[in-house]
Image (cartoon, rainbow, N blue to C red; front, side, top):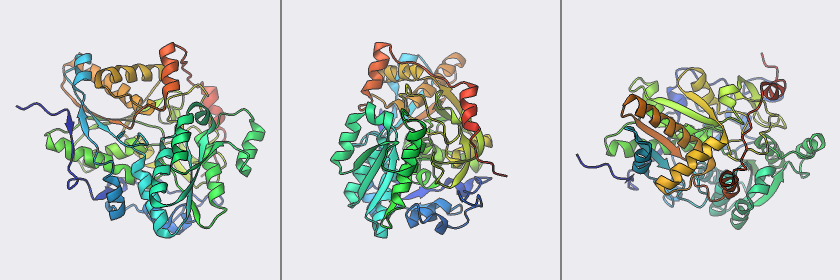
Length: 456
């Protein structure tokens, strides 16, 4: 039998022409979004028009259309960096002395260095098609802000990015890349918005959070009829656009006669894992297969493993619709020493529902262990992984070591969301032995839970 190639690519003709909407196959749907003022369910796309582009609002509310055509302009843009390869991690397997077969889907072959460009391209396209002139957004580690900067430059839109302050300070080169593509970058929380000023008044030394940055971006977008807000994770529309990752992965693995026993992804808001697992989860939902799905999140921001399944605001300023999700509370802010990304207080309603119903598993890991896995992977596979991606690497290594103990030759697929070249401060801290682990106490988390809205 011929050896499986290191890299399996699709041709342009094989690249998916439609996104997959996982809600069409879910046995039970996530609970509806709630109006932040009335706490009543949102029932029509028009309810979201003040926040998002109209077509995105329709996608957000669509629970029945299984496949949605990718616009031709987006497909052509995708071809500048897609399809992306599925790679066999032969060297990592050898280093672990495992009978497991380890594959990863590599999404880092674009300037943003991550999978985020898949959704950014769609959002910028729909904004331009609607006749809008600008977008606002937030970014944490910087991948999403970079991706949307690229897409807005390509489609001719202005962009303002509210970047979590601690990341703004740690990653100046991310800021430089975004500015190169024409974006305006503001550290969050800032004095440019009412919500930012209120947060600073209560906590003037805060390093910020994605929840803060989201609030500021939405406030600014709602001042201008020609502007809308774009979110890089969590929402249904984002998981829809990211489904191209899993669709490509499935086609690539079919070409080498493989199918994953375990699918592993890092989990912050859910965009990467939701996209990677989509096509394989469809098979599980429809009874064709019974693969395991594992979310790996940081111990310092453990929404799935220690959060509450409850309705919560998606932002600190409480301007967004409420979603039922696993959450640490919209006021939760990760410790400033947290360098591994995945900083969001909640998890995608889709992933939260699948986890709640037993279709997924989740583990949380301290960041020193994450960077140990990252370093081993970098040495063996010659790719410097993003800290976020390295959570998935850790999960894959653990599964491979279990196979070593049991003698089972399972097939493992994980998502390598991107590269770590803008994360050198974190790598330096790890290499110098100055990186610290922080795990919130139950009391720390309770303060966030105390702020959860009272919803019957």
